[in-house]
Image (cartoon, rainbow, N blue to C red; front, side, top):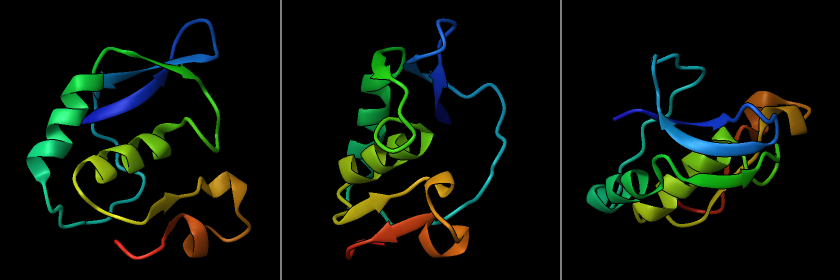
Length: 98
């Protein structure tokens, strides 16, 4: 199952949807302590309203962090590249889990 956060037609509200296409921007392989919990979380938010879009706190990247945390990865702190000067240095920042 591939999911993504989408911005709804009103331009600000978001929802989690099953991805129609698999367009990978960047990939990182992570071993999940509880992959079933991560999958259960993704299924639980599928089709739900997830609030207003916010690059720093409610975006496609923060959705990934939520899934990782649900899967038992600790210390996940993801920062969107547009908020950083150097994509390679801060696109994925962890305080101990990745």
